[in-house]
Figure 1 (tube, one colour):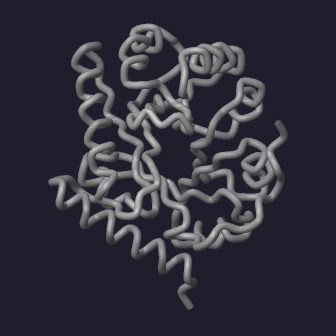
Figure 2 (figure 1 turned 90 degrees about the vertical axis):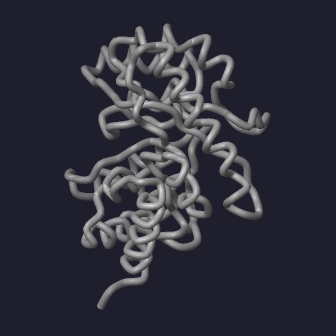
Figure 3 (figure 1 turned 135 degrees about the horizontal axis):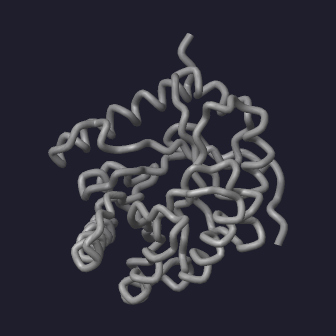
Length: 236
């Protein structure tokens, strides 16, 4: 019997493929990160039978509680705000950090990655809407700091990430997604380096994000349903 979350995953994949086709790209041009935050290991294990192997977490302590209980073949991306004092614990478990939101954090991440023998993929989080409640580079600061960011030898900067505003209709976020794509294109041209990644789009708006060029979408509730109790609170 097919479980509800497996059926949800199938439906999300169908929507992703349709949106990719509308943008003139194949379905496999867009990576699905199943956002498993607040959901226990047994629920994640169920989804691995679909199969699905890429998951996103936003709390370091929650990831560290769940990942050791699950198959080592799973891939983990970190999508939440990252504090300097948690970098060293996080790095052995993740292949990518989507939320590098300042040059200071990037510099710390690069230094600790060198000490730990890691070369993480990273996305630069940009607050394209310049929302005071959100973390991230402003469009101006990421332009200013890009040369210094690209000079950090242990970081593989794949592209940009954004978390747009909460809106009533997904279409209202199209301008933010288009702005991130345009900014990425401008930065890549100015620096003369490829920045292929655009991490944007969540459960309510990933179709629109894909139409605007997303290469990674972060989908939680559309797959897992309503969030469950957090496994362990993140200390301050």
